[in-house]
Image 1 (tube, rainbow, N blue to C red):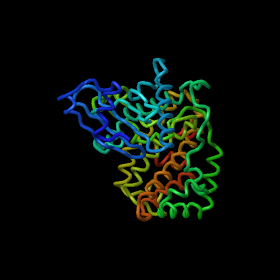
Image 2: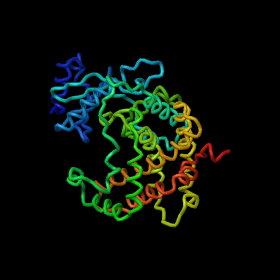
Image 3: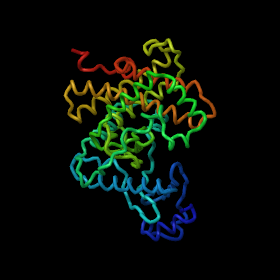
Image 4: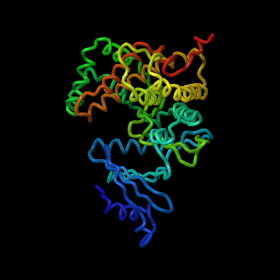
Length: 366
């Protein structure tokens, strides 16, 4: 496993760095480890690098898969290909299990961008939608795309977890699962939606704001300054999951700004919360409409997909709540509130579309 002291000699030996001496002294190494051991190699001049190193056999398999996804998407040379939204893959060391990609300097994740700017540019939402549409329209070929599909994410079967999932759950997560298991309607809706899962596109599987990178110099033309990272989970899946994941991050931000009581409907929220939601709605509308336009969906098809997408967004919200419970010493009101919002969205997707997303389906506007 490479540490900060070993990374520069390794990069030199692999040809990623050709400088030496005083120039190397100007390079900064940052440890940003999460699931993998991650190192940022920051250069004052030239290409900065990002290294992901696997910690175990599962991690090695994920990194090998991520490298193959990069190669598959980079091989697409069509004019409107998705490859322009990828950081550059510099190499994958299959022996040491190290992935090296270009690190985009002067950039922020979409979450950081919104927090810094405190606004939701429509042009940026359209760029994200266009990127996902290009990905979902990627031509699926048996010799390119892995034939195996991971199926619906683990959250769809959280109410009946297998032994592998039980082992890694915290006590707070177990309490959250008990709440879900105690609600027969929640369980029924999760089972129903799991049965509706389709393998209809190449999807990212983790299309959250943290994995969308915005270049600082790209505003206001965001289309050329958007990169999507972290492809370990990518594969054949349901396109609505990716789209729902993006919408879920909007609603999670709104949800975290207030604790809704059970008897409040979205249209009767406190004024300051409604203001935040109204600020996001133009971006959410633009995101959905741009995605539908580039996917070339007919109005009736788009309406059906919007309902499915909102229900998937609800499950993604539930996943976010359970992930928060995993690192929390107790079940907070915010976690429980997010779980309640998830259930409400599953039960009433059309109300969610109209009142939370601010989108009017084609059928309702006739």
